Image 1 (cartoon, rainbow, N blue to C red):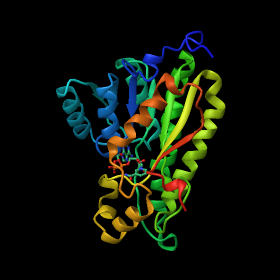
Image 2 (cartoon, protein in one colour):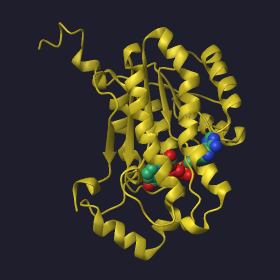
Image 3 (cartoon, rainbow, N blue to C red):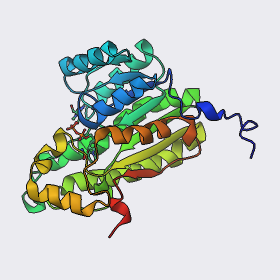
Length: 263
Ligand SMILES: NC(=O)c1ccc[n+]([C@@H]2O[C@H](COP(=O)([O-])OP(=O)(O)OC[C@H]3O[C@@H](n4cnc5c(N)ncnc54)[C@H](O)[C@@H]3O)[C@@H](O)[C@H]2O)c1
């Protein structure tokens, strides 16, 4: 195939320059790292978290390093707050070209002791939120016949671990929600994919990193023999947000040091 005939310019295949990229849960951890990566690549990032003061701090830090950022605090699990804030971003910041559903939490307990509130909260924040935010962004992307949605799942969409049954159920559900959105919204030129991180060093995994047994287990199981560092997710996210992945739809890319590949 002649790439020029297909209207593809190879030197701008991975460009996210000028794109408005909303990243939920981007005040710290993987979301913050992705926000910095997209800002460095020329995107206008929209920072989100639950507290406006945390959001403002990140916006200021990105702007001070020469990047473009705005921010809006909302609870991704609150559907009406989500709808109001998506409208506001579209009106005041610009068309959301890329949505990254990244916000997530864990509430650990053995299944037989897991409180109903903690089951529901983990399902709401890790799974339902991606439905709420994507559903709110969808009419705008549909109208423009253009959009990219990236859901952050986990290795736990494939394999379970004790005490995180709620999280595994949510991430497994998010993997299938990714396929459902890809199936229904592809006809509007909206590509929906997921990134499944392996074990990365963030606040979410701090206790595990500091647990010598768990740390040794991760290092022995991952073929690369180490934890991931958040910056190692940026390339995959930029790929899935750019024209380079225009015919990739409904996939999960595991960024896991080879864990999925080995027994
Ligand atoms: N760290 C890892 O090793 C790892 C591995 C696999 C998947 N993940 C997934 O990656 C995502 C980010 O994880 P992380 O390690 O950076 O976690 P983190 O705890 O460091 O950061 C989570 C972010 O989500 C935000 N958040 C939480 N609840 C929210 C809500 N209701 N509304 C809005 N924002 C909310 C927090 O404010 C924070 O900014 C999560 O979905 C997590 O499940 C992480």
